Amino acid sequence: MSFQGFRRDDGTVGTRNHLLTISTVVCANQVAVNVANNVEGVVHITHPLGCGHLGADFMRVFSALVGFGRNPNVAAALVVGLGCENVPAKLVADEIAKSKKPVQYINIQDEGGTLKATKRGMEILLGLSEEASEFEREKCDLSELILGLECGGSDATSGLVANPAVGVAADMIVRAGGTVILPESTEWIGAEHLLAKRAINEETVKKIYATVDKYISKVLSLGIDIRGTQPTPGNIAGGITTIEEKSLGNICKAGHSPIQGLLEYEEKPPGKGLYLMDEPGLDVESITGLAAAGSQIITFTTGLGTPVGSPIAPVIKITGNHRTFEKMGDNLDIDVSPVLEGKETLQQSGERILKEIQVVASGKMTKAEILKNREFAVYRAYQYMV
Image (cartoon, rainbow, N blue to C red; front, side, top):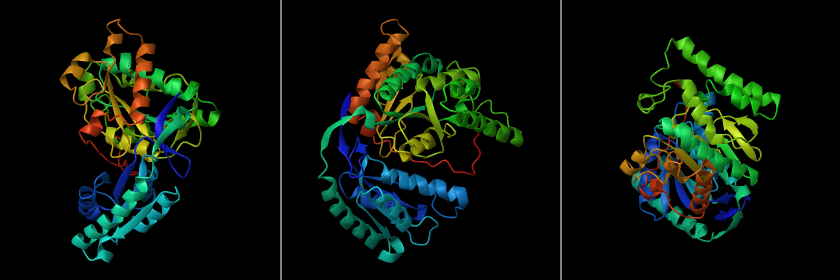
């Protein structure tokens, strides 16, 4: 099985050929936007972070920016800083450069203000654009794909149909030698023992239980009742009654493959196969973590519908609720509700999803891409997962 991708100098394969401007700090956001808006084919990352971070919090923000720049879907990058922030543009650019891709940086203070920095950034991107245009799609094996799994706005059909169908596709990718990442560790509660049974070693078993215990302990220490956030009001309205039900549906996205290990947020998988990621299940933060970890494509199951996308990774929206597909068709890519109607098997739906993954990886645009949904948010180390 294969797809048409862009082979990078470090041996990885991209499903897209983006030029990317990366703001390292909130103060540089507008310049990053200005530059991107004035050069064709450029996408940008902006955020309210980049200054005043310490320790693990600094590393989360830094790793997210570097991970996006290193993602195989990015052909070249321009890092835009202010010049006095905690997350310096030069440091981010130097780390991205280790992926052997073209990358440069500017600081607004060094350039002499917004207008001069914008002009200089445009000049740099014109040069980077010429380098990026030299990449052409070529046949690539499915084993070179890292698929990220996400769900949000779930209802009863998510766990019954959409997630299991994605699980079929995920298993086929793993069997083909590819890599799959299941995040959303707060949505393993009540199902962690099922994941632990699939772990390939005792170390991973311990990490799975410790990750869930950490979250539960944090919530209890705050005296917070998580009902209303897990499941959410939308989940409950959609027919999900307990966190255990939500978790049992959630883990179906990962199929039945053995679990190779548990990654930290934004951590790149060290090998092939199925990996878990410790991440709170917040849709945009989760997608950001998956893309920073190297996912070139993401599937997103939803029962209620959502427009969320990513600046660099195509996000395929899948629903098992036909009414939602009709109502929010401009945001959704695949309807697997025929399984509920007895018109299609889960295996057939999973195969259909895999084919869509292959054609999207080869260049077909998703609804989120067409509508320019490019959300970006970092899960910070010291925020509470509630």
